[in-house]
Image (tube, rainbow, N blue to C red; front, side, top):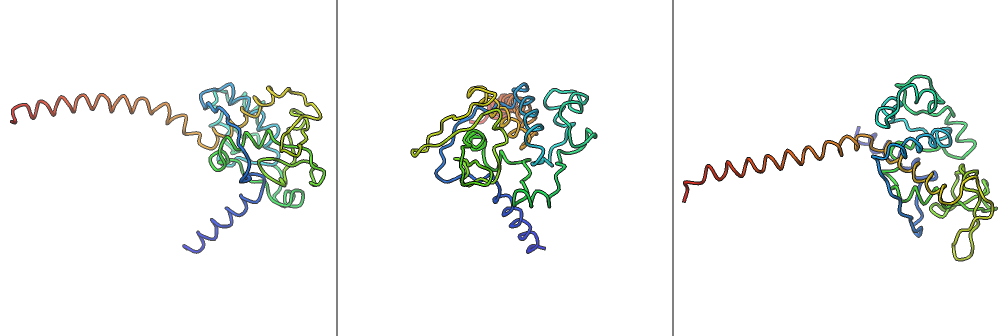
Length: 236
């Protein structure tokens, strides 16, 4: 049993590390401001995820009805605007693409993104989304500063446009997209914010509960201190 568990772990780790989410050792990461309390940002990020990511990448640990509750949406709103692969609100975010087709098209099955923000970090994801550049030597025609020789195409090229890279590793826009750089940065930030949320949806509840726990401990400390003084007041 122990050997089987170890073998399973190695297999999962190998699969996960072979696709497009491994940071290059020399990549400089851009900082991103993540705010899980910003429901408007999370809603926009969910929309981007469903429209551009869910066709290849699933989030099998996240359920649509849980997302609706946490993001301040009704189940009808989610079903009408954010559910494209199922009609059951209680289902997890699975993809329609078959693994064998993904293997044939991309060379590897795209990884599930349920915990990608915890595995790679939000700064890395933000940098990855913003540093695609044209590279004629690559099968998809693009490469990425955060992941050298990436196998994933630049799926957001219509929004960002195309970038080129100079000898010093600096990126510059050579074909404008539908969004200006500031708007695309905001879109990337919203998507990363959503990925951070699905990586640990219970964090919202923990943050809300944390202040009450601290308040309880503060009150208990006052009471305990008063009891200590009462018990020891006659001890010299």
